[in-house]
Length: 239
Image 1: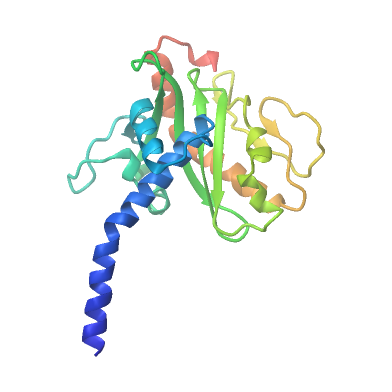
Image 2 (image 1 turned 90 degrees about the vertical axis):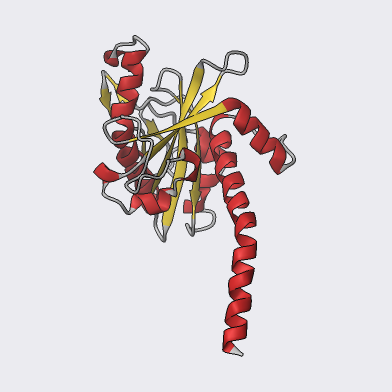
């Protein structure tokens, strides 16, 4: 009986895998799109995937900003298929870093935003996010944060438009140096400067986790960002 049940479960797992893979792909592309635009008008998964395929191209880079086409086993790397959580367990210097490029609707040769995935630790478990930078690779166009189990109404607010909207328009560089964007302690409701956002009442540790995640991953993408800026003829000091 044990063998029969084991075989049945194995067959079920194999049969469900394509659907699970498709759902993971859809969820990933929805989050990437959500970092750069409002997709609430998209009603079906097919619409999401079609828009993504039309407006995005991607690349995988190393910590020095160089393109990486194959993994250690020689298999082709696909940015959308990299498991950020699993990749996070690898030493920072050895990770593969996906970059998603949002293309101009009328001129697909022009990149109008770059989206960078990131992963870290919150108060109770993991947090993750996608940060989109405008074409200047300095100004935040949008963010899409997620978490596994932050406290409802407190740390879990990182997923709300209210909190994520605070990051729009903030800047990650100052005089050519990465300074990132920091969520301050406490929630004052007062405007913050270009490198700070207001905090979340009762969720200081979640805020610290978000700050650490942004700094960790933006520092890993800095070499790529500066190479892109150099290639476009813009001075690093223009950040």
